[in-house]
Image (tube, rainbow, N blue to C red; front, side, top):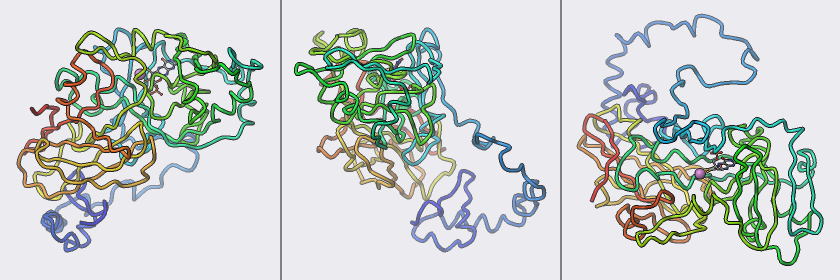
Length: 428
Ligand SMILES: Nc1nc2c(c(=O)[nH]1)N[C@H]1C(S)=C(S)[C@@H](COP(=O)(O)O)O[C@H]1N2
Ligand SMILES: [Mo]
């Protein structure tokens, strides 16, 4: 079938199909379109002029900062109050099931704060570089904007994304199971320019970014990564970072766990060994079955999820042309392919990647098929350019046990019922 314009919308009618019922050959879409044509005489959405056609709308600049249509008011970040003891040290989730393409709108990026949202006056914000450097430096925001800058699209995934699912299917919706990921275009200064300006001592081997929020978050980052592709970012999707995302300055650590992307960045210390901070000892380590814990598991391995249909985005038709859509990403580079299964992993078919496929960014995939209306066990499986294949949950547990919270990149299963409802399940 053709592009998205020929697809049925959520009410089961088809705009392009209405104009030309014969275009969607080879699928059962045409039947729905014919029904739509027959219904035209009695459909008041066609026969009656709505107010928005009869009256002038609001003029320009009545909405100086634009916002989505009121009919999209359900597309919002959500939290799960029982997950955490307080909203200041908690998480809200990206509504992945309502989004398309690869860019997350700024107002919908999931949030993870350890001490609430710091509201920083940028004229009073400073970035200090100290430790094993030739000359410790302090930068104002204006100073930083005199370095050469780069624009890069990257995903940020919290290592705890899908962490509630280690022992079995738990939360009903990809917003909750997978919504601790966002993907935006950052504008920022390569960290290497700033470190070079301060001058690295010969024994420099690690850096420790520190936040200006009440949590003063700190993590140890190997110097090699800091000099390779880290950014000190001040813009996301073209505008200033949102306060929730670290305004006025955050560290971008491409492909690595979100915890290292220190927000409200105020200091970078250079050292010769890691600091073993709270966030890399008591937290963000992975307890194995034998009681040992993995440390410094920085990279987010390849992962994918079907965002629609999913529990919060059920199918509103009962058979025929059906679009499966989802996201795939890898901290090790580009997504090479995504496969989709309709039967719980017995048979796989290649999905179609559409839109930019960028390293360490999310990629959008689609899989169109003719649904016979029977139950489905939908899965997606990502393969990245290193050849790494996303594991099943069983394969993952065989290696990692079930004591972990972090780094759960196992294959997700959605059970689609013949009535279109979708549920989070596991197959074994
Ligand atoms: N200063 C500071 N930086 C921080 C945090 C924080 O609480 N304080 N949370 C970290 C965690 S655990 C994650 S997953 C990401 C979340 O980034 P986001 O809120 O932009 O989604 O920020 C990281 N950086
Ligand atoms: Mo996180």
